[in-house]
Length: 172
Length: 172
DNA sequence: CGAAAAACGTTATATCATAACAATTGGATT
DNA sequence: AATCCAATTGTTATGATATAACGTTTTTCG
Image (cartoon, rainbow over all chains, first blue to last red; front, side):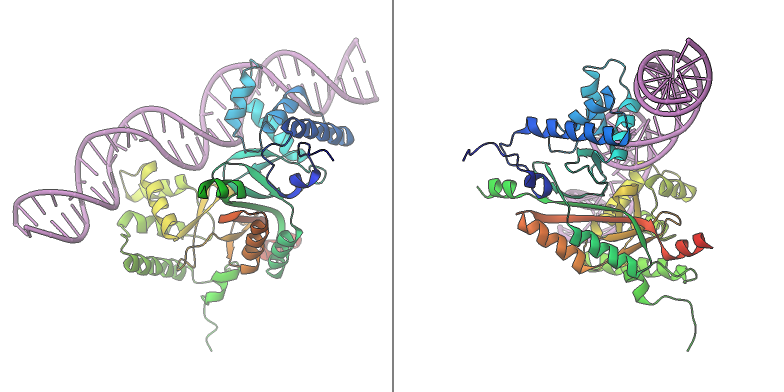
């Protein structure tokens, strides 16, 4: 067996990315998934939108709109706040990215195939984000709300803390 | 028995306030709890801080910092953004209010006796907020995070949807 | 093609929040 | 009471995030 760089699907589903995973592949996969999704739904992944998506995927950290704008300006003269906010809105509506409310920032969605409000673990130290998809959590919330007659429309779940890697480095 | 205006403790714990509850009492209770807490901890609930707390408790809706500022200015000439943000920071640190990240707004805490990150149901229509305190939810999240070696520091849980009252009015 | 819709450009402004430093106040200690 | 220190508040400026409004260009599709 190859020891190989990690790009197994499960890290996207439930864990922080391994330190040395093949990140170029993350970006490529995300763009490919976006293209497929847009093709399927008849949506237009324009040059700007694709570029913003790629920039969001530059890392597994959440990125602010104005940081994206700065990067976009390097290659796209006329970029202004609406340029990036429109792209973000499109990507959010498609489910290709998520907005992290507690950080006013955006992060790529690894599983854009079905619309969902994400559940996020956010490391205070390295700032990386892991997206969970735990039905137990969302169902518990839904049933608890149900009992109060409350119809859930969207769940915002953002958990701040210390990831395993950072905890190890700290004690060391 | 008196039919009496509702101010039983359980509505604060887990439900939206009844339409005709004695809201003056909510404010009074919140201020009394704040005074007790500050006295116990040797913190100073100054005039400004108390006033901001009262203003947050004017309703069960989240309130923005600049709306508080506007109201504060009516009676406090020199009020400026730092005035209100400092008061909010103090109240947040004490656990007397919560910040709703998805709305950039603030809401009173009905159970400030122990520090906690709240769980909120937010009605899209009437904008009222109910605070849950469901240990099942927070423990499920904590154990799921644990399994990934992630140490939870703070949970942000904000559920958007339609409350029972508004659902009834809509169908009618 | 030509009309309508979608996307984008451009300028201005709204909204939320903090930095930095000076002035004042509250409360403990002498 | 006078003094001192720390906490609070005043004041001005600015940073950070986001949207409104309207005109122009591009794309789509009959």
